Image (tube, rainbow, N blue to C red; front, side, top):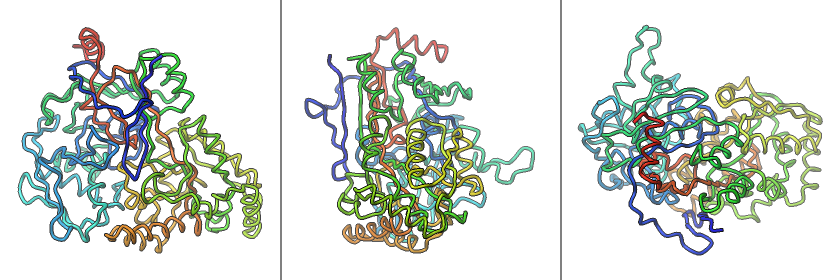
Length: 562
C-alpha cells in the first residue's frame, strides 16, 4: 500500500520537508478551478473578531473572509518568509535606524460590500490592535509595545514608527489574527444610540473583509459557508468556488467525516492512532502531513487567590508532574509530544535538555521531585489543598492532558477537580479572575518568534492573555530588553533568565508538553502545506481539488446552489 506522508521538522528554526523516500518535491500540477472544500472544525466560534480571539475555532472558519497586510508565504509556511498580501511589491525593510517601516498599499482591492480598500483602513485596523480603547480587548497588544505611531501619508501608503528597533515587529505584523477591517465599519454608530463603542465591537458579530471568500451564512452548531470573492486581489485566485466549515466538536465525528467522504480535511490535528486508522482504511486516498507545533500546553494558578500567591505551592505543582513519562505515554494518545521550555523545541533559543533538567518539574527522578513537592506544600501549610482546574470541552489535548494532570497532583496529596466547559464560556472564564482556580493555559502562537511570544508571560497589566493574573516587573523589564537587543547572544542570555524565572524561580506557568501537529487529509486536496501553527496558512486561496470536473461542479451545486 502506497501512502503519502509529509513530515516537517524544526531545524535551527526553519522547516525541512522530508518523506520516507527523501525530499518532497513541490507539485508541478496545474490547479483546477471550482468545487467546494469541506473542512471540519472541532470547536465553536466565540466571536468573529480576530483581534479579540485566539482560537482555531474562530480562525479556521473565519480567516478565509479576511486579508492581512503581510502574511507567511503559503508556498513555504514552515519558514518566516513574509510576502505582501494587501501591500504591494516586496515586504519593506526598515529605515531610520530600524524604527520606520513604510508599506505601499495595493490599489484595486475591495471589501466584500464593494468598499475600495485604502491605507486608512489599514491604519484604523492596526490602531485597534495596537492602541485599543478602554473596554476593547486586543489579545496581542503587549507584543506591539515597540510601536509609537501608525499613519497614512497618503491614500496608499502606511507608515509604522517605532519607539525602538525590534526584530519582533514584522513577525507580529504577519500574525494571522490581524484581520484588516474597513475604517467605516470600525466607525459605525449604534442605531439605538446606546453603545459609543458599537463600531469597535461590530466585527464580533459581523463579517466584511477583502479575503478570498465572501460570507454566505453561519448556522451555529452546523456550519459556516463562504463563496469565491470574484474581485479578490490575488489574480486567478481562489481556485475554489467556496468552502464549508462544518462544526464537529467530537473528534470521532471529525475522523468519520473524513473517512466517509463527508469532509476533506481538518486543519488542527489528530492524534497518532487516528492518523494510523485513517491510513489503514483509506490507503492512497489519504495524505498525512506532520510538523512541530508552535503551541505549548500548560497551566497557571490564579494569583488573585491566596493559595497560589505562595510560590512554594506553585513550585510544588510543577514538581508533581512527570513530564518525561508523559511524553512517552501521552504522545501515543494525544496531540502532544515534546518536553521543552518556553521556546519551540528545535528553535535556536530552545533550552537544551541538560539545562531543562535543572528546573523544577523537569528532574528525571520523579519520586525525588514529588518528595520535594510534598515538602514545599507542608512548608506553605497547603497539604491537602483543594482547587479546581478550569478546562475546555475539547478532547485533544485539553481533556486528555487535563485528566492526566489531575491524577499527577493527587499523587502529592492535592485535592483536585476538573471543570470542563464549552469554548465560549471557557474563554469568558479565563477573562474573569473570579471564575477559576487553575486555568489550563495553552500558549499557541503563529509565526515562530520566541522573543515576542514571551509576551504571554509578562505582567497581566500588559498582557491580556496572562492567565495567572500576576504582576512581575522583573519579567517586564527583561522582556523589554530582549525586544530591544540586536545581539543574538545577549538576547539568548536574557531569554534564559526570563524562562528560568517563569518556570522555576517563580513558577508562574507550568509548561507541560509541546504539541505535535498531524494533519491527515483526502489526497485530492492540493495546494495546502502544513505550517508549524494551526493558525497559519488558512486563507485557502491556494487550495484546489484534484477531482473530475463533474464532481467539482456537483460540490458547488450542492453547497452553493450553482
